[in-house]
Image (cartoon, rainbow, N blue to C red; front, side, top):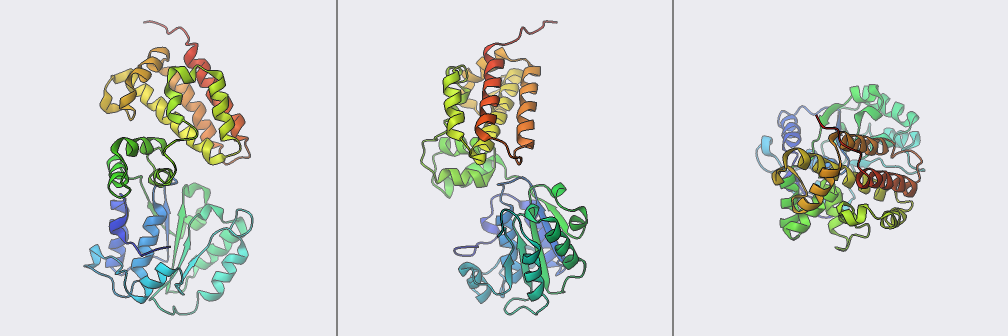
Length: 345
């Protein structure tokens, strides 16, 4: 947690999650452990940090059901300075995993009473990074937790965690903020033009974290993803190979490409069926969507989307991002530029 403390009022979306967390706070019935799970980049950590500030705040403001961290007490000031003595963050230190030694180090201090707040809090921003030994050690901690300790775990997929570990947590599913909420935040808080905000929302597949990160980058997108939907680009092999080359070894760039292509195919299918601008994200690209929709059958779009889903599901493996991008782009190009004869009823 860096900078001035922020509360739930600064969180974009997540109204149901916040209401549930506030309700447990209002009843003074905090669980020993919480698991916030949902897609990457939707603001789970932002929610968790606001929650932790509140339960450690010395002088929270507002009625319990609408409580916020005050931002001014000693606890809030320590959070702002990243010096809170009762707050521990467990993130990977060796390779890409959280080790059992890190859990043991935490176990050594957690039994002691908190120095400042009423509770000690442990945050695990990505619980999928726990190796097996660490996960089992954390499980033992949660089986008999000290009464003044709260653990907050975050994961994109709860299925990737030990079932026994999940069973010890109060699981809270986090849904992505709405399109309107994300775009409004980009416009009001970051000062973006509406068209730019909408383009970032589309590129980030509706996830506010990647959208905000992209907003900090120069307006010229080095990957030129929006151009992929143009007939002159998708039909040009050299342009597609150049795009794949710019992805290189960047796994995040591959993820961004697959997300963009998935949303584009979603729009192609919606446009093919409805021809309703209100049903598509790329409403300003109607001529391009029409070109794709006229050349692809519903089965074609489904097949291409399934291929992208397979890439997405295997993105954690040791894949060559450039090669995967080349195969995906050229496969789509071949299908759309050489459409199969569509059967008539």
